[in-house]
Length: 95
Picture 1 (spheres, rainbow, N blue to C red):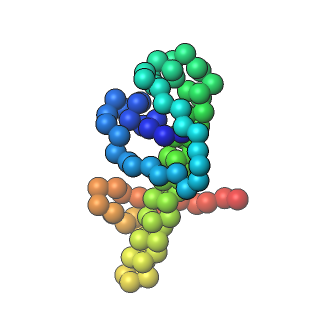
Picture 2: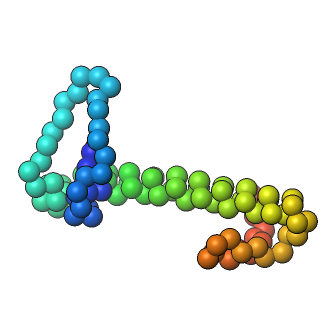
């Protein structure tokens, strides 16, 4: 699936794609109408975007954790630490 974000955001494409192997590609003149007419496709796009958001959130949480660990290691403090405009408080994690 290519170009789904530009369709949803009504913005120009921002990426160039090259196939690594011979491919069959379908182009839609009105991709927004196609998505409205094909609820299963819209759900697939929603799942894809949710997966991407989950990966981004996990990555950012990991960065915040490492940044906090670095601050604690250097300062010896483990109280609330402010990161830019985001203020985090310690949270107990349970498995």
